[in-house]
View 1 (cartoon, rainbow, N blue to C red):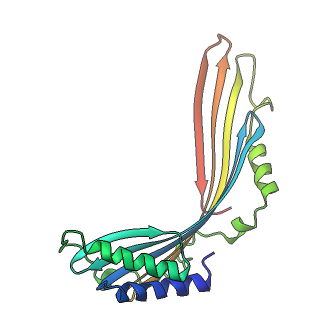
View 2: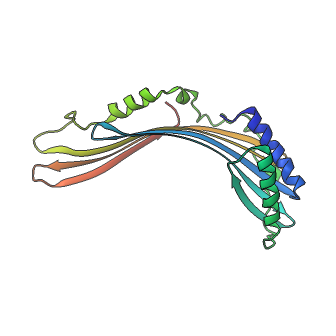
Length: 211
């Protein structure tokens, strides 16, 4: 998800922070893609697709600390943003207890983001039609599932979603690490009515990083 160009831009942004007067800094680039299909009473209700990209900065300037975030990652805009952010940190009260972690206690083995084995590349291959089919297949409304003379389904709201998350972190102490994760969720809320006309509702939710 994160491209080689975005990785290099983040590294340059770290140098920009030093040029703007930060004695130390940590930058986190986050990128995500999320898809969702919601169903209502056995039919498709909503379909959404969301892509997000942002850069978070932790700046340590003259014994002061500030955190900032931007989604404008053009190099000129980013340089101006970092310069202004550094200037704002200088206006804050000193924070002598705030500093980057001891390098000896930092992770050094997260090289490509797949070390935790919670990233499934097949999630990105799921088509819009497949997501809709999965959501509709999971629905019970109108299928007579376990219904009898004693109760029936009054309403059902379901939601299938899948997402990819990619995070890259670097700092002025030489840290460079990455984390990749996928997430597949399905949740449903159902209202049933018994033979006396009383209504009851409940929900169920499941999640997995792998298909």
